[in-house]
Length: 463
Image (cartoon, rainbow, N blue to C red; front, side, top):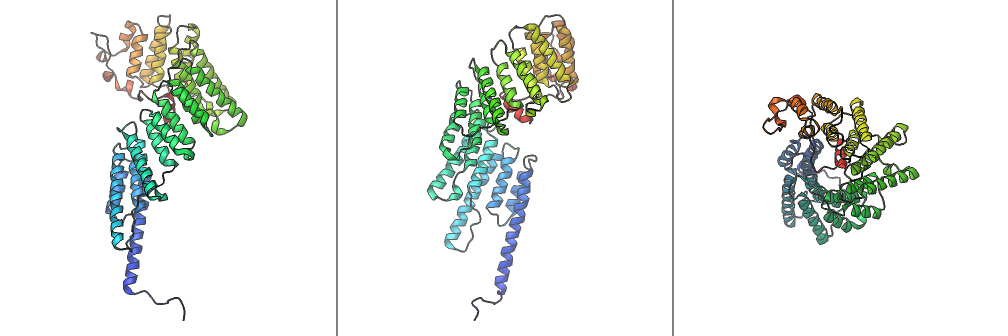
């Protein structure tokens, strides 16, 4: 007698098998659709809602279904995405406990919905992406992390064990939310061996954004603790120095740049190669410093960037518009030292920007050139002609902003200012201008940035 049964399944067994296969197939197909919607979510605010509707219509969703919808809400551009992800997580938890309760009565009942580390980390990510935009987002992300830690401690279930991504997500949230450096650093220490270069870089960013008086010093000290560093690590510390009030901040930033250059020269390690952002952030540190020779030093760094790029030695050092704008700002905020040389620099930089096929002046360019005209060589012969030419270029290119008009008022004589501002946008009583009444063609291309964005952050957004 064969030990294997050759009997055919009964009619009821066949129906049950077909039913299970149909359910699994329906769930699988829906999960694929939800995954596709999650991919579209960053560009389409309705994708997450469409994914949620698919979940709600599905008779037998599983963990993958919920995680897919959570990912869609996390990546959605809507500021409400985090709260919706949070609400869905709580619904998922209720469904899980309901299924567990049924299973206790019927051991054959499948528990198909079980939150795991990916589930919780995705909701953390939803809050982290909105940190700095939604109140208490970082705290919400940390609360979920603490819940995940508690679940792992209580159950010992590896499905609840926080991983590097979990911690990095919350550290990033603290970095974005006003630079909560102490909170970010505490999490880094808690991570222990789980910490990677991304973890450290996020804490460095928190220091850069923190506004703490010793942020540059503490960021550099943390850099020295890192076993693995990259260009972002160095550049973020340079940014921390650039924002500090230390008198020697520019020299400390420049010293780090030299360290990067030396390390790259010796090792040819591409991960440590200084790039345009690294050099530009040092220039920005000089522009924000009180160094009387900051214009010349910034100009020299720009020249080095050109040499490195043109020679092929480091094509990633090619200067960008942000680089030129930062050198212009160093010129515009210089004390009247080597005035003729600074004037030549400003004219040369402006001409190079306007003639370059790769650079397109923005409102910061025009405003900074006008600021230089007002601060460094106001009243000099030919200044009015240059001011008029710059403002007319600005109008032509649709970059007239409030800042440009403000600097125009400082740089131009009262007669020229009155000539350049349209009648309907000029208040003769107090001499003020109204940016809202400027011709649309003059303002059409203005893209204002948030005041608290650093040069490093602006550069990263342009990449």
